[in-house]
Structure formats: C-alpha cells, structure tokens
Image (cartoon, rainbow, N blue to C red; front, side, top):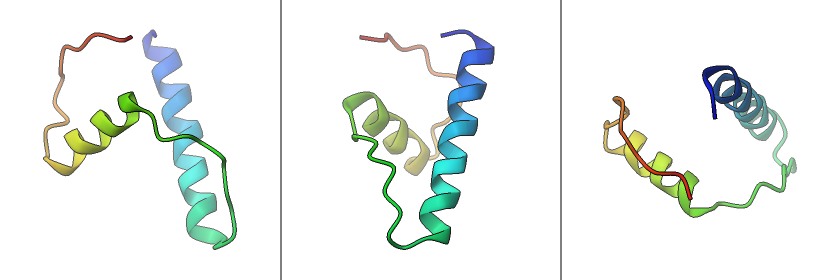
Length: 56
C-alpha cells in the first residue's frame, strides 16, 4: 500500500470506531485478522514507530 491508501484505510477505520462508540448495537462486520492483531499489539505495547514488516 502507498501513503494515500494507508491514510484512506486509517480514516475508514476511525469512522468505524466512532460508529461503534456511538451505537452499542453497531457492527461493522470487520474480521480481526493476523495483520490487525499485530497492529493492535504494537499500539498496546507503545511500539507504533516505523516498523519494517512484510505483508502477506
């Protein structure tokens, strides 16, 4: 993905999070995949700095 694509995906996910926060019954239907799990773990560990990683 390029910069523009990453920013668009991030914006989409932020809007989904806002919907989840605003509506208890809201479901975006997004599956939690391995790539996303790694991102969550990095954020929770405060290791969001630029990581070089391989995409599947």
